[in-house]
View 1 (tube, one colour):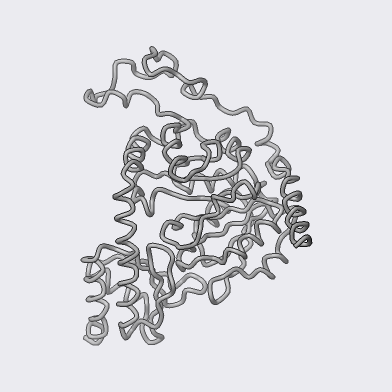
View 2 (cartoon, one colour):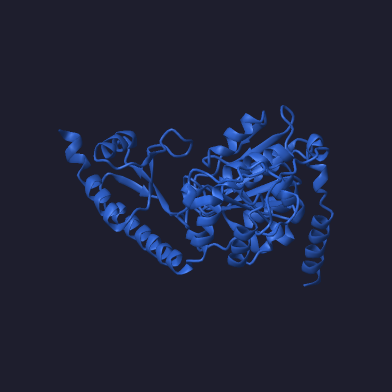
Length: 376
């Protein structure tokens, strides 16, 4: 017992000595942030606003006069709703124009172009690589295992204290849908001296617990969540980062001044107040996921339906059935899915989002008819 406690205390001490500034690019450390008119100080709503060069007479949308004013640059009211929902301090929350903006910010803050590299684990979300390459960052790819789990030995051998700055882990993973083992994620967070980005975009569909409850224990961890998936607000483009106060301060320092529109903030606040409907939709998605999994397994041309903790399923067609041809056939039936067959470890695979029961029944019916269609 004492040995266990000593090991825990040593790990905690090691993490408490984590030096964030040593990871931040020098040009970022020395930057003077842009101070927007709305960001300089808190203002009473009844104030006379003559500071931001707005049109004081209003917009052509006279019935919506507030559009002539800039939105809150730090989304305080929306963050309060998210803080209450997730039981996380506002100071540990950053909101971006989708998670893609946050991924871009992470690269800008922590990685030096043409010098550093990031580590990703394909098959996974494509923007980790696209954003990194846009910034001139070398991308080290370590394939997941055949069971779509982390290859810890290869990952540990690829870590370089001088040049490895960011690791991206997606759990539940996209496009495979599975949870990454919690103990393996913890191993990487503790072992890696750089920033670990844990993308939990699909966490609400999973029975696995979010790491957000443990953010205090991991100063090098940034958790990504979103209102696009389980909350059904993809059109608003609101991504969430949960991290230490120090990391959040740096994100706020270099973000675009008004990165989330007034409309997006207002609608998201209203949505977050309707938790009953959220849980009702979430329950139905999980029921439909089970229905889809069971139904797809009965279809002769489907070789495998991979276990999913997300709002989609990855399926593999049998060897003599081209997933691309099936994808094309479904398009002709006005059903859009994703062909993932060209992605590593996803040969002959389609990714299918869980729809309404009516949509799912229609899909199953059409896939069942595919062999007959194929023989004509």
